[in-house]
Image 1 (cartoon, helix red, strand yellow):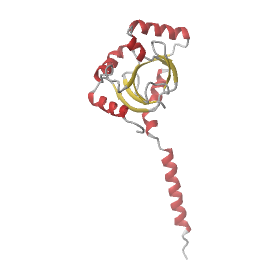
Image 2: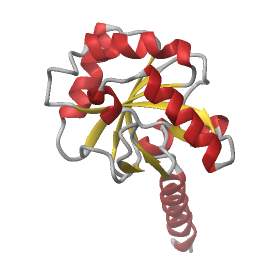
Image 3: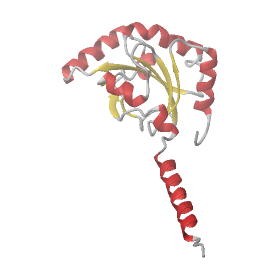
Length: 184
């Protein structure tokens, strides 16, 4: 007489193993990255809590790591016509190594204010003082040598990302992601 418990038990174990593996698999947000939670302020001194205080449910963050990368950021601003297109919430986000003191951060902010006297630019510029390498790893970026155009939601999940100079194809993908409503 053959028992049916052994095949049934094997199938049950296989199903439980599949469920365990499915729950342990990375989700899309984990693969794309997550912006760290940071208290910052715009250059016009408005407090912004990143990411839950971002201006839109989905926001385009133009991330730079060096002053020499600002021309590439401006390429994204012009290429996406961000100054004249109210359908996209966006900001400039220079990521700077934290000097470790209020005075040091204030000095850097004052230099940026002198460099960017236009109030419209100041209102959209959110300098982030943090450990750059930690920020790069957390956000799922490839390093500090390029600029990034990153679509992010208020939970900090990176929804879309483009690296380097403005590209119309990459811009279209970003625009579509930013204008979606609800989930991915």
